[in-house]
Length: 182
Image 1 (cartoon, helix red, strand yellow):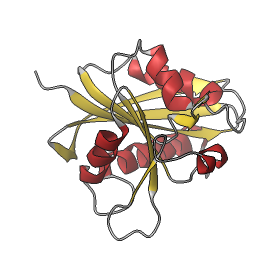
Image 2 (cartoon, one colour):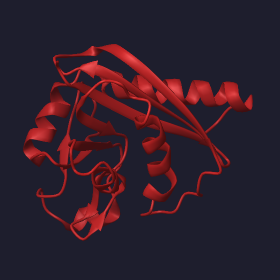
Image 3 (cartoon, helix red, strand yellow):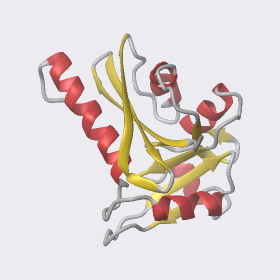
Image 4 (tube, rainbow, N blue to C red):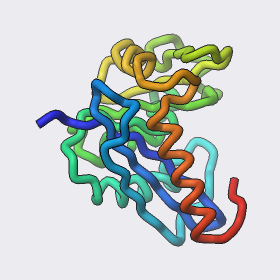
């Protein structure tokens, strides 16, 4: 059985969260195999540099629903903030027993990363975007992770399956709370 790629993102309103995880075949990331959704009340407030406190419980809940064996998990966040400071992805990697590689694709760099070299973060330009994705990883070589992100389906900066997870999470949250959300 081929292991799937998993793309996960969450949307928040006050202390409510909706997390969506989509799976794809590694050779065809333009076609969603499955979509999983979880809802959570009482999420922690956002703390800069400690995003994992807010999002990790949400991701772990949706991971409990996934049926496919996974090859790689992709998140819309950093794996490492600096060599000594783990981000959401490193906390996730540890929480799953370091069994599945985690690749972070963040739209913005983290301040501490600016002082480090290419051993921590790769800037990947996709499509015609002049802005990079800041790729960090655990359980997979960083250069290899950057190459994987470069090859993911989608002609824009954000890969198709990640964009789909993001859009679905926001849509489901709007339905849940009946409001426009962040």
